[in-house]
Amino acid sequence: WSREAFVGEVTKNSCARYIVAEVDKKVVGYAGFWVVLDEGHITNIAVHPEYRGRGIGSRLMEGLIDLAKKNGITSMTLEVRESNLVAQNLYKKFGFKALGRREGYYQDNNEDAIVMWKYDL
Image 1 (cartoon, rainbow, N blue to C red):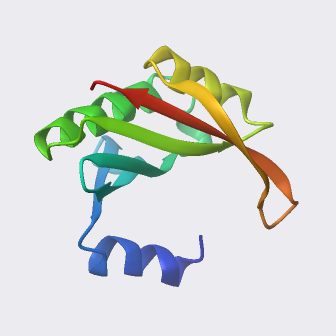
Image 2 (spheres, helix red, strand yellow):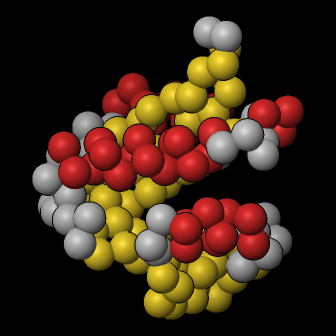
């Protein structure tokens, strides 16, 4: 996302819910989803490269799922790059299942997206 799009997302989108991960009062990651009726659509999970491999992505996922439940969400979905096996494994660890594909979804390289769902939060 461009900086402008991201700022608009977190400041103006009433459907958006975001959390951050901090280490020593420094933001090292963030994650968010949109509330769509009783579903959550995960939009982003990002961890600074220097802090990857420390379980921060897992803590962000735990936080998203907890926040989703507090918002009345009963299922969650997301799209992930076909090549991003690390992210796919993280989502599988939390019970997400690959249930579809969006061909050419990512405009930067025309890569397919894997659509994943988790039901019964």
